[in-house]
Length: 246
Image 1: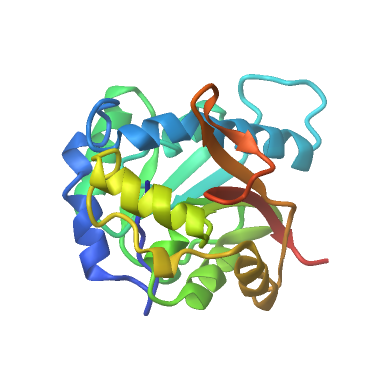
Image 2: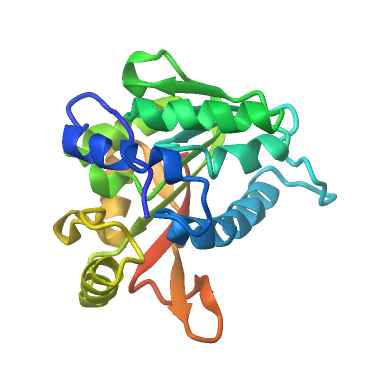
């Protein structure tokens, strides 16, 4: 469950290659990225509520990001970037894998969406001042997490909103996300490295060093009845808002 990206000193070529190999299958809801297709609506529910709260949207509309700029860092083939564009944002998507960018651009074009997709190093692109910065399931795949967070902070506008998600490093996540999910084929083998998962406390500290304040994390949990859903249980995965420290 990931979208890998490039940051100076943090990119892992093997990680970029792994996700690039999945590119042509990315948009198939029954393919190797099936879990992302199930996860994406849960993320979007959280992101939409965060957008309404942060930008004080008085009336709920279909395009709450109209007139705003958004960037999805580690965009993969565009599963999140496209809904952000449909919410009205001028969207930039950045990813380390050229094949991901190729597939993302083709899919957006076929759907009539003008998304600015770029492959490479976000810190060298001169990108800044975004109203919304998202990075879903990426930080656990970079070699230098502090440099990665600093680059995200550089892209965020002064009054902007950031949303991050990542697996938590717990016994439960090791058993279910790594051992079980990869062994039975729900997630491609080699996707997760449990030692690189980030706890909420660790993420809080990384963000604080970069001059950012982390909101209250919300878990993304799974149950037989509800499937993947937002929860107070942070044991597997969590998603959180981030803003500049005042």
